[in-house]
Length: 469
Ligand SMILES: Cc1cc2nc3c(=O)[nH]c(=O)nc-3n(C[C@H](O)[C@H](O)[C@H](O)COP(=O)(O)OP(=O)(O)OC[C@H]3O[C@@H](n4cnc5c(N)ncnc54)[C@H](O)[C@@H]3O)c2cc1C
Image (tube, rainbow, N blue to C red):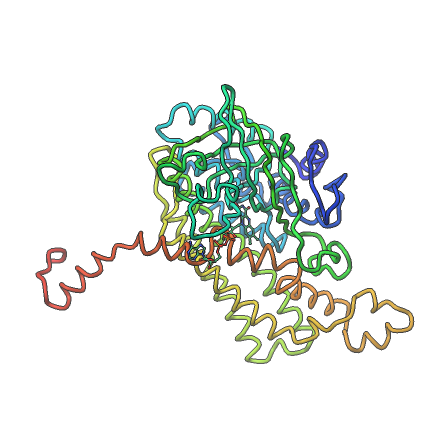
């Protein structure tokens, strides 16, 4: 299994075409806007070698016959789904941000389910996955198309979707653009459709993989808040960060051995819904871990402000923890109530997974509100921490800023609430794995409304009771 240092070294071997602020980036790993996100992914490798976390961070693979990093493993046993959530919570707490490997993990498991009863696709996929496990690769998932006018279907505006533009004897050529987490820190891109597709939309029903530096792949780093603070004294999160890229696919050739689904509408529909279930439950792991950090930062500020013992402060911290554990409980519940798919991997309970993610689109906003309440206005009015060391200004500023510890705690709250850390935390809570309405649509579809009405009719005395003698 790869080590954290080995992972970073392996990134240097890529010929990545990454633009940052309009310039081609010569060494992505060393760029101050990229490095914090590389560090967050590296944590997923470090845990696999840490005696305290190794059991959680690794799993025996029946594909390669040895332990692999859990982020490349299939959910073969009922406890695997819960262990994933536990690992995500640990990593969310250790890094305070998005560690970027969950889309790939959920994607490989969803593809395993979707290629069930597709022998050619299954053989290709498993051969590819063996390589991923052996090399312990970081995968990022490409699903969210530009979409343009949301009221139109893909064929009405093909340029807004990733699609097959040519089928050759040895593979396919794809074109389009996708929003992706951690793209510049990955080894391979897993392309999957972003929605269920209909007859006549087969060109958009593509699931395939390619190296991040395949000819025709260009990445552009997202422009985000407090970008110029990354890694600096005012970063808030001193070591770790998230990363979003737009990835452009300009006629990228994908050989058949890495094309898993092409035009198979039924399998792609299974892929989309299975992935959504896994990924919506995942938010019950990573985000509670991030929230642990936010609660800790808010608590730290109240201690340095001398208000920690006030009853309303204690109550607000308890409320923050209560909401955090609500999300985590739903993620664990969706995982613990998983069922065995005939393919041999476990899938989550779709209702609880969607309720979990739906809460994630709401509760962290309330938790951030409470953190902002407890932090006070200095969170946003404080001068740079560098100014605190200024020979002339320092002494006067320190009476305002308090200790450096207080200033840094405030910066961490600021970062997570609306700074660089808010993108892979707050905004990801809202839109990652689909915006809120996507979960409500699944809930309306999955909930057994008739059984509820049936029981109400019995208990109201309208119908006879045929369930309880
Ligand atoms: C931090 C972050 C990380 C991400 N990482 C990844 C990643 O790694 N890989 C990836 O593939 N994607 C990623 N995404 C993209 C994410 O999956 C999408 O943002 C999400 O699915 C919502 O899609 P959208 O942004 O196009 O918004 P939209 O779908 O446009 O939603 C915006 C609003 O419009 C409404 N709406 C949309 N369509 C319709 C319609 N037809 N009719 C009526 N209302 C509609 C929605 O309900 C919502 O209220 C990431 C996003 C974020 C913010």
